[in-house]
Figure 1 (cartoon, rainbow over the protein chains, first blue to last red):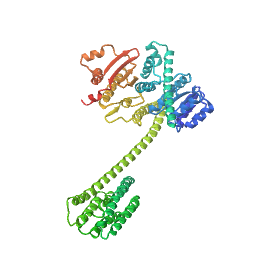
Figure 2 (cartoon, rainbow over the protein chains, first blue to last red):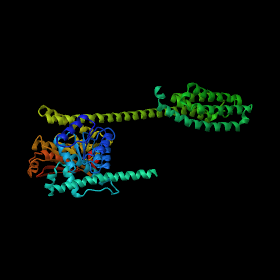
Figure 3 (spheres, rainbow over the protein chains, first blue to last red):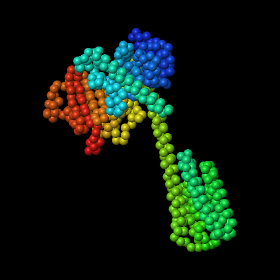
Figure 4 (spheres, chains in turn red, green):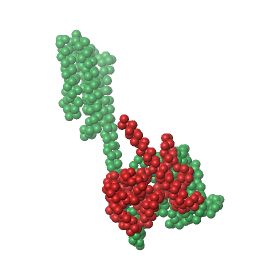
Length: 209
Length: 381
């Protein structure tokens, strides 16, 4: 499924995916359309623009993951708003690609998320690294998972632009091990989100008493 | 006088008149009490009752009348002052020419302050002078305390009037500032929507251009450059990211170095630093990137990573070039050809940090570590 409010973009992405042999089961231009069509068609991969008419890409990601947790959401964003990208990944997106990425990069990214492999660009790795460093510096409760030294090391190398292959070479690990570490990092990041949501719920609940 | 009829100014007046209503009741209780207590000084004594009734009914009327902005007319304020002056003028008639205390006493302050609030310092001054002149004019003898009271009327009127005016001005300015902030926010919101649209189109042109080849590819490349610049700009302008005065968001400053071949990564939140070290870090990073272009090639890819810790920041600049042979930087330094060593190491060392060059099979990497504490001290050297 392709979600984008710009028809030209939606068509271009749909065409490219169809040409590469993907079966595009639905397209949507608003958040509401995206959620209803997702429920009706159950696509394996959702290519999602963050800036769409209400509800926005972050909320759509949350809803989709709640409906069907194994769905892969690939964020395709033009915006420079880093907080939104981080929020979408925390909400359960498996990858983030900037819109100016080439067609080949897009296709590779879709292939990878479809295979369950997170698409971590250096930009996203920098954001995630920042998130863990920020919570390490500010958290007092200690209920948010932290990264192991190895995971931090790998995340740093991704942020510095090394490919998984180069990281595996440098750290003398297998390619598969690097992938597993990256998946764990993403899982921990998404747990941050859950911890935050739980805290929020508790605070709201206490307020309501 | 339109400034005085603005909602903000009227709201200030409303509050002041509410406070004055309380004061009026307090001075009324005082004046009526004294009048009844000294009813024996009145001739005939029933005149005391008449005067007290006038004060009670006028106070009740004034409290009601001043409560609504539309009823605060010149006629009302004039009548208020006239009643106060009238009660002063009848004093010698009902208490004899050698009277000690005037009939209304402090009750006149209600009319004085109403003039001051509604007509500001000039109203306060005129009312104060009128009341003081009439009071003094009726006296056979003027002692220290009578003079003091009159002087207070003349001084108090314009002071209260001036303060009322100042508060109204401040309220107007605050209103104006609030409106300006709302306008700026709306503009920023619109700008974000426009920016997003432009970014989408630029990204699309870049993508389609690449598919077309030839001139199209060149067009696509140009669109890509513009897209990155706009994205870096938007990143630096996100709401809630505005750093404090004299501080710079290092993350946004470094993001501006992003080009088609340079990727800049960093945290989603602002990394605030004093302006001087931030500029030096950006300059050192730029020098490292220039070096990549010079030694690896114009199209060489490079990655900048900013990590922010509570006590320090780490900046890494990596390329995938062949690397610099061991000792070359040191040799250049010794030879006096400062080059990279001068512009990168020097700048970072001056900030109390360290800059290291690591080369290996996966390229060359500058690792710069700069402390965040005590930088404000360095900033003011």
